[in-house]
Length: 290
Figure 1 (cartoon, rainbow, N blue to C red):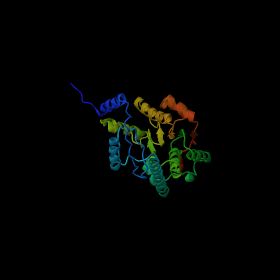
Figure 2: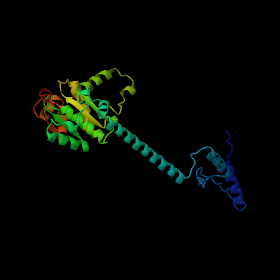
Figure 3: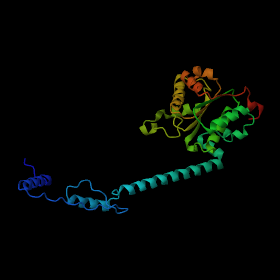
Figure 4: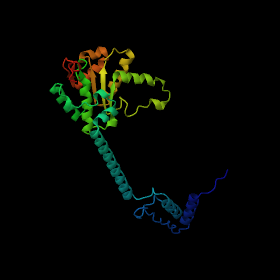
């Protein structure tokens, strides 16, 4: 099958004949200006073969706003970034204002039960001052794991909710990035998700305990765990430890009993944080002061 001669082939044949006849090379077409749609300055043409290509380019420039010069493109990008930053700062300020106006509502949004939605560090007068001070300092720079342990009714969950409130009112994290969950509720949610069959159901939302920027995990090993339960709890806290996400954990068992109650690796990770707060052996509910 005979292939047709392209314009490039014809140009080469013409140039070869002119060279054989010792004629001057045919002058190349001068590219037309490709004006920027914004400032109308010329845009360099990427080595056009002839004037026809440049004319077609100009036709596309008039119909497509992608063809703008680099300085204008950079100005647009800077303006877009600045506008996005202003919008983000405005949204952050609005959310912080809503948290300050209704801290109890913010705690409710994070999953804190009604009983602890009024918790605050300034109102924790029945707790040891050393614990309140440690909680206040950690809330200023929330990092790593914190383990609060002591007998039932000693104020662990109250202080954990108060820490969560302090972190939000100080603007460290928005309420959409914080989560409070008890161990019983967490395992119950996992069981209820076993019926999910689509891949979209398995995607973890930002509010999931594994992904939340700050998590309060309440009642660690409050009841005996099955092997499956131990694996789920250890997996959750191991994932947060690996991602270096701040986590506040409350429990009744001491640090030395975590290995047998849940997992030895979890006990090691909690010990590594060195943030282990022990509560006095007293039940503030019975005393009537909690």
